Length: 324
Image (cartoon, rainbow, N blue to C red; front, side, top):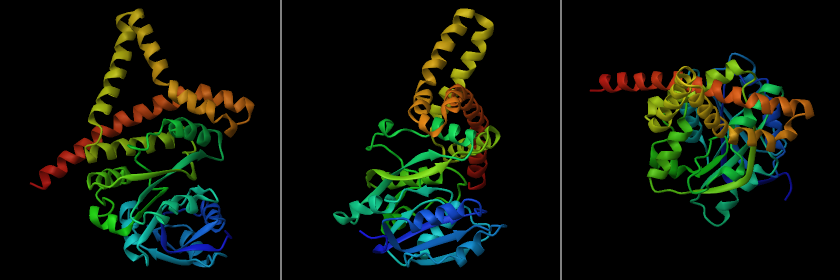
């Protein structure tokens, strides 16, 4: 294949908001694809930087048609829904600005359509970053391929593809959610009787938050989204219980505290293994520092989730009362 091969019936869609710093790498990675979409549709949610100007000035060498819609105030769900609705083609590939797809990402992700044009395809993702913390956070929280059960994997919408008919069938992305919208979309697709075809080699690189404060805000919002959507109450409840036990054990008995420490070590084992397997992301001293930082990343994320989830539950209850 040449760099100008294209899937003539396919639109790639993305949403953007103040992405001027990450946009050049994203656009360059789209141009570098071994196979291209016939069309790229981007919705801007109201950028205050040069994102829209950069997009409108972009003329990709692949010859793809580029359509840019400005929709100030549109959240990520509304932006995706608008992009899909305005797309010219019935096969839709979704990714996020701020990612860097590997050169064969689009070709690999859409390959299942060669034998099943109705397939819903789940791609994969890998951590990247320009700072120690962005790489360390990404390495800790991103599952490895070996952890994935293709039968139950819920893909991120930074790497997913589906016929537009599926999007119509499930009512699109949930615009009432500001976070976790892609997870709710996935679950709705499954509830509609659709199965995901896993394409583990269709990989986009994504960048973790640049520091722990930004990461905590992100995980607070993710957990708030869980609470809004009524997702994973048992998982969140177990987290509260585990930390309550750990804190009380400190005061009750050193043996209980030791038991809690052993439990915590088992709990973070997966995170430590993820960082170790991805040590190539770091230079030698930084790799050791990333392993040591993993427990801190886990705890910061957990505390942020424990703060965010009840905020989401409270929002959900208010909304239920207002809709009565």
